[in-house]
Amino acid sequence: MNHFIAKAFLVLILPLTCTLQAGTVQYLATDLADTSPGQDLWRYDYAVSGRTFLQSEFFDIFFSSTLYATLTSPTGPGADWDVAILQQPTPGNLPPFDRGMFDAFALTNNPSLSGVFSVDFVYLGAGTPGSQPFVIFDASANIVESGVTSMAGTTVPEPSMYIPFVFGLSAWAIYVRRKSAVRT
Image (cartoon, rainbow, N blue to C red):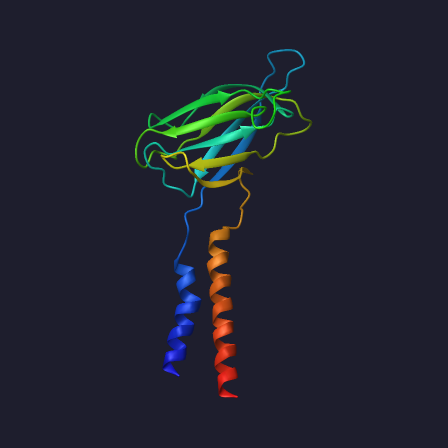
């Protein structure tokens, strides 16, 4: 019986202590004063969390050519990041060359994430700009994470916590079922 309790404890508790590092990118959209007639100027301020970046790791945020134009004024939270617009949204090009790209490159290990990353843009859609896809790369340019930005103030459940828990709970249920089948 003690053996059963020890296994049940490990199966149920161990997954709760194992967390995968999951980066999140939250945005705040600010409507700016329009400088050109017919253009709707906005700014995204991004807060990045849940991940420790190493030197030469980077992330990209993508802008659809159907909703965005004229990406300008990229900024980062400090001197340990190099930020740039790598590509402007270009209607008519074939994907993925039709989308704009904001890039943030870590110049040091554990660069500061205490400030915001910002970019100004012309919004072509109606209402308030929304989420965009992002990708996080390691120093060898391998994709380590991808996702969609979320509006600041909204909480997104951390899937990396639920997967091990569900796996552990399922393993425990199978163990109990097999154990009871052996007894009968």
